[in-house]
Length: 112
View: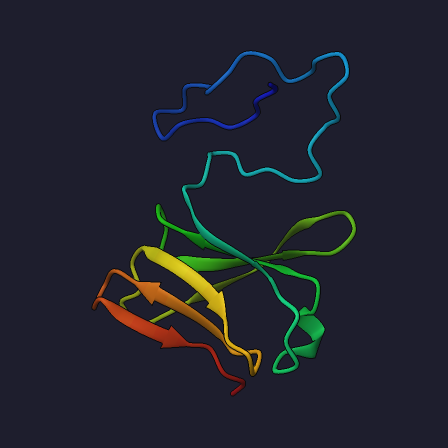
């Protein structure tokens, strides 16, 4: 395996960033994230997000929206007292839902 990330302590998680027969990643976080849930958005509620990846982060206070070419973090979606994101799902109507630790609440993301 190849590694690029750093732990919170700034120590590398691995020593090898290239290896024969392995492709380079399209995108990676450095320092590392702690993934709680991932959705490839397909809903109609936010048509400009279709095909983007929504990522819940256990070690942060937001949901990341990743997309584009080249792949990149486009947006950070914050919630009131969200703290860590425990899980992330897309409802049948295209609404992203995520569970936050801050108030132990379930959040619905809707257009303004």
